[in-house]
Length: 354
View 1 (cartoon, rainbow, N blue to C red):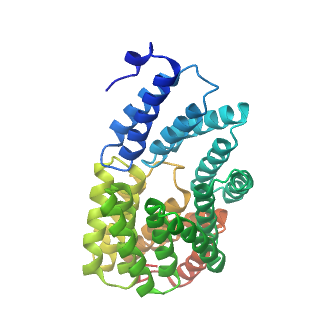
View 2 (view 1 turned 180 degrees about the vertical axis):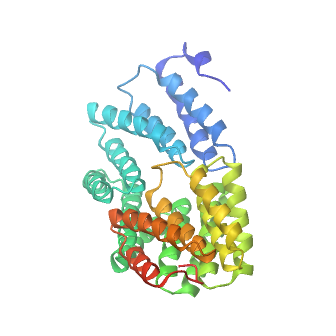
C-alpha cells in the first residue's frame, strides 16, 4: 500500500485531490471485510496532508480515520485522531468540521457509558451543525440522541429523535444512514414488544446494507434480528442470524462485535438447555470484549453470564455477577435493565432471554 511519499512532490492541489481519493476509498473500505486495508489507505491520505494544518481536508481525514478504528472496536486509537481533528477545525474556524468532531467524540463517551458527557457533546455539535447547513450531521446527531434516550429507558424521546433522523435521511436519499436509523428503530420496537414493526425495520435495513455492500451494517443488523428471535423464544430462527453476525465480526477482526454476537450465542445455548456451554461461551465473550470499549455491552454480557451461572446451580456466583451488572447499568442510568436485575436478584434464573 502506498504511504503517500510518491506524491509528496506534487503541488498542493493535486496532493489534496489524491488525499481525498484515498480517504474516500478508506471510508468505503471501512464498512467492508478488510478494515486493515482501509486504515492503510487512510494513513496514505494523512501522509499526503502532513504539515498542511490549514487544510480542512486534514481535519476530515483524521476524523474519518478515527471512525474506521472506532467501528472495528478500537476507540483508544480513535480518540487522539478525533481530538486532533477538533483542534485543527477550531484553529481554522472550520465550523462544520468542528461539529463533526464533537459528534465523534460524543460517540466515544456514549460507548464508555458517560451519557451526560455524550449528551453535552451532541448538543454542542447540534448547535454548530444547524447554522452551517450540515443536514446530514443533524440527522446523525438526532439518531445519537435517540440512542442515549433508549439506553436511559425513555422510549418516547428515543422514538421522536429517530423519526426526525429518519425523515432527514429519507428526504436526502442517504441510504447508509437510513439503514442505521432503521436498525435502531427496530431495536427500540423489540424492547416495546412491537415485534412485527421491528422485523419490518430490520428487513428493510438489511436489504439496504446488502445493496450497498455494507458488511459492517449487515453484522449489527443480524445481531438485532437474532436478539428479536431470542426475545420471541424462537431459537431456530435466531441461530442463523447470530452465526452470520459472528462470522462477519470475525471477518472484520472486530472484537466488540464478536463479543456481542457471542453474548447472543451464549443466551441461545442457555435457552436451548445447555447452560454449561452457555457459561463457557459467555466467559469467552467477556474475555474477548475490550475493557471500556462498550459499557452497555459489558453490562449485558454480565447479565447473561449471571443467568447461565444460575442455570447450572451456581447461585452465589450468579448473584455476584448480577450485582456487578446492576452497578454497570446504574452508572448508565439504564432503568429497564436495573428493573430486570432487581427481578433476577429476587427470583433467581430466568428461562427467557431477558
